[in-house]
Length: 200
Image (tube, rainbow, N blue to C red; front, side, top):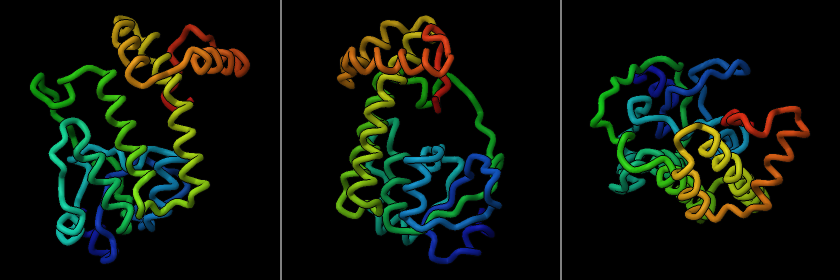
């Protein structure tokens, strides 16, 4: 990871990225490219802390972690990526040890989804967001549309119906959006009763 960061001295953040068959790693992205990939192509900036390396100057300039539970890392990656280049580092450099005291096991799935959405919307509305106004609006609209899919995923994942209801209320997912999502799945030939693919 250090070698990859040293290859791109202007970068402030390096992330062990999801595999991308269209480009080799390491690869440096400008703030605009990183935001565009994250909001319109694949989850670049949602990587776990063990997948990240941060240049100290970028960490200090961005103000470091906010201290918010569940989303502090995601929030910081979005802040750094607005100002500094991001290096996509080869994947599979980390192994996560699972145990019952991990932060991810606290709070419920609905609350986690809502606060992650809040972080994404805050990043899009930040004055230094590298996207154009039109792109920001498109990304925000996409997040809003995805709420129906998130609700559907929770609803169809078995044992999560109460969580799905909490998410729908907290995120303000209207019935029309849910109906439109289910209809869209039918038109694409997918069963409306099976859990959707997270990227569908």
